[in-house]
Amino acid sequence: MRNLLALRDRHWPAWARLLEHPFVQRLQDGEVPYTAGLRWLEQLYPLTQELLRLKAKLLLNAPRPHQLVLAYGLVAAVEELDWLEVLGVNPDAPRHPTIQAHLQLLKSLAEHPYPVAIVGLWVLHRAFLDVWMSACPACEPLGRLTEYLSSSESRAYMHDVSDLAEEALIHATPEERARIEEVTEAILRYEHALWDLALSYAHNAR
Image 1: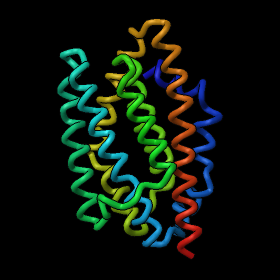
Image 2: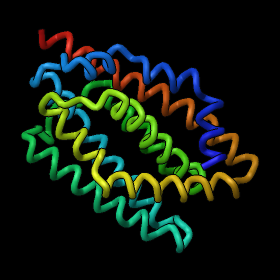
Image 3: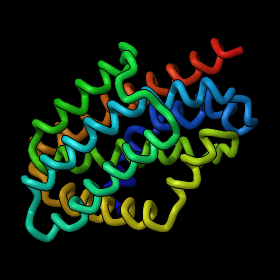
Image 4: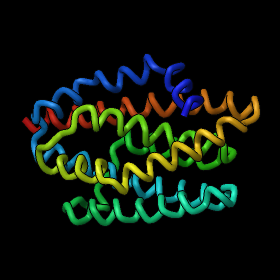
């Protein structure tokens, strides 16, 4: 993961801002009301749907040795949608403008060459996990997401995606590497907006 960690280091100021987001402190302190957590998870539903589409396109474009990991990623995305529905989220809930913008980011990522898209997928997963697992919220319903993300299956999938992204980054062309830098910057910016949205829900639930 040497090249991926170097990528993260080059974007560390933006990455660190995610880890220092005020919502993270609320998660750590268990100060996110149930209704706020559920409302935010509801907004994650369309993002998970779009991630499913992104992973499907990655699977089609991937080198043959990469396809098994990506096929599992498709199954995992479907399971996440099932899990959200079991929690009681409304799949047809109106989408917040922040989510609409995030969806466009995912759509655009799917149009990039495979090396750019797979590294972008790693950035998406790694940035979210770094924030979430730094807080390890136990309050419901968010505690269930902590259990899901810390499962052995989730950890194994993230490890395998890291291997794919590392290989792709090593063999990326100079043009693809430049795009990876741009995509990483954009993803971190949109991730910050996602946590801003979560914080606003927590504030408004008071």
